[in-house]
Image (cartoon, rainbow, N blue to C red; front, side, top):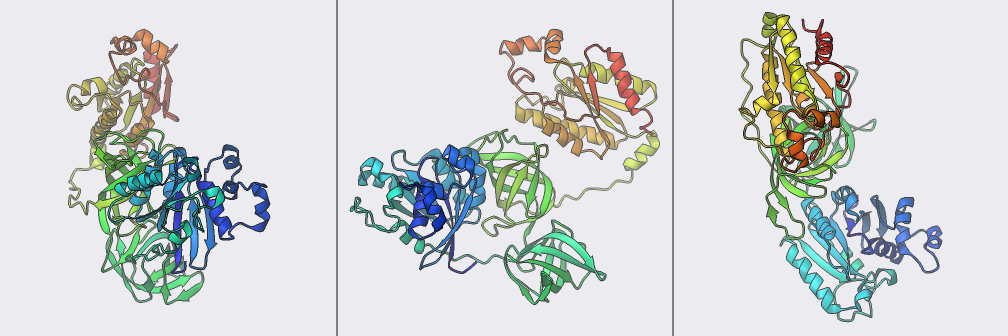
Amino acid sequence: MGPDTLRLVACGSVDAGKSSLIGRLLFEVGGIEADRLGDLGADPDFSRATDGLLAEREQGITIDVAHRSFRTAQRVYLLADAPGHDRYTRNMVHAASTADLALLVVDATEGVTLQGFRHLFIARLLGVRQFLVAINKMDRVAYDGARFAMLSEQLAIWLTPECRLTVVPTVAPHGGNLRHPAPEMPWYEGPTLLDALAVADVSRAQAALRMPVEWVGRADETRFYGMSLRSGNLKVGDKVLVQPQGGLVQVKRIAVGWEAVNEAFVGQAVSISFNETVDVGRGDLISAVDSPATVSQGVDAFLIWMGDASLVPGRRYRLKLATRTITAVVSEILCCLDPESGRETPADRLGLNEIGLCRLAFENMVACDRYCDNKATGSFILIDPITAETIAAGVIVQAHGTRNIPWQTMGVDRAARIKLTDQRPRVLWFTGLSGAGKSTLADLVERRLHAAGRLTYLLDGDNLRHGLTRDLGFSEADRVENIRRVAEVARMFLDAGLIVLVSLISPYRADRLAARERMVTGDFIEIFVDTPLEVCEERDPKGLYIKARQGKITHFTGISAPYEEPVAPEIHLQTVGRTPDELADRVVSYLNGNLR
C-alpha cells in the first residue's frame, strides 16, 4: 500500500442516499467502467453502481461490504461501502476495522439516526479519528442553511476532542458539493467532499513487531514457522520473544514464498526458522523483545454484540485473537454505552447491536495488546460454541496482566483416588423440564449404584437452592451462575473419584456445554429426561405451572422462559409409557462395564 493511500469506510442509515452518493462520486472521478454506465439508466441511478448483489438491487439496500478503489491527482482511495441496515452491523464493523477515515451519509430530512450514531461510535472504538459527514438530500429541505448548521453542531458536540470532523452539504444525484461547489448553497464556504478527502491524514503510527504463528513445518531436520507480519519489521539475526511462554530466540532465516530474504515487512507472509530449539505452535505470538505484548488471563474490552440471543455474564464462548482460539467467559458487564449520547448505563446483558464495556476471563494465558497500541493483537471475536457463529467483536482496553496464582499440586491425585475406589468417576447430568422426573430418576439410579457398591453423590437443583445457590434467582444470568457453581462442585467430586448425579433443569445448551467442558473427555454423560410439556403441567407436583400460568412466577422454563432440548445426549429417556424403574435400569445398563 502506497504512502498516500487513504482507506475509508462509508456508512450511514438505510435510505440516507449512501449508495447514490458513492456512485456519483465514482462517476465524478471516472471510477465507473464504461460498460457499466449503460446499466444506470437514461436518468442515471448511481446507487446501482455500488449495489452489486441481486438481493441488494431487489431490496434497495446494501447488504455486503463493497470494496472500491479510485484515484485522483492527489492520491489513491480504498473505499469500503458498509451496509446501513442494523441487521448487517457486523459487516460495518469489519469494514471500519482498517479505515483511516469514516464517511457518514446523513439524510437531511431525517437527521442523524441511532444507526448513524452507532456507526460513528463503532468507527471511533475501532480507532478512526477522522470523520467526514455528508448531509445529503439538501434539496429535500430547500437547501436550508439553518438545518445544515443545526446538524453540524449536533455532530460536533458528539465527537470527542481528539476527533477531526468535516461536514459537507450534498445532493448526491446531481453531484452537488461532491467535486464542484453547489450553486444552490452559496452560504456554504467549506470544502467539497473530494477536497476534504484530498487533505485527510494518512500517516500511521508504526507499531511494535507482532507475528501470530499460523503453522509449523519441518524440512531437512529444520523446524520452520509460517506467519504474517501484522506490525513492525523483521531482519535475519534479530532477537525475538515467543509468547506467552516467554522464550528468547534469534531469527536464523526468513523466506517469502520460496525466496530467502534478509528483511520482511508488514503484510508479508513469511516462514522463519530460529537458531535455538524452541516450543512454538499455532496461536503463539512472536514479539519485539523491547516491546512485548502483555501476557494475560483476562481483559477489559468493548464488545459490539452481534448475536440474536443476548450476552449473559458467566456463559462460555470461543474467543479468537489473531491465530489463537481459546475458551473465554464474560464475567461481568461493566456498563452499556449509548451511542447517541455516549452515556454509560448499568446492564446485566447486551442485546443485538448494543455496545458494552465487559470484563473477560480466559481459560489459558494469552499474549495481547491494548487496541490503541496494536490493532492486530488488541482485537478479537467471540464465537458461539454451539452454532459456530460470530456473535461479538471486541477491542481490548486493558489487559489484566499475568495471574500469579499457580495451581498447587497435591500428593493424592485423581489417579490415586480411582485406584482406591476401583471405579471410573462419571457425571450423570439429568436435564429436562420441571416435573419431567429428573430427581425421581436420579434418586433411583443412585440407589441402584449404591446397592452395587459404587461411591456416589447426588446434586439436586432444588436442594442446592437451600445452600450453595440460595442467593440466586431464576433470571437467565442467575441460571448461568447456578450451573457454573454446580458444574464446579461436580468436577471436584469427580476428581475425588465419585459418580456424581446432577439433577437440574439446565435449560440452555450453551450452559450444559460449558459444564461438559469442565470435565475430562468422556466423563460427562448428558441424560435428557424427555417429558412433553403438557404431561409436566398435568403432573405439576409442586404447583409451579399453575403459578407460572397465572403470572405469579416469572422466568419459568417452558412457560415464560425457553428450554433448549439436547441435540445429541448420551442417553435420551422418553418417559411417556415407561415406568421410572425401566428408565433407571436403562441408565445403569449404559454404565455397566464402563466404571472400572
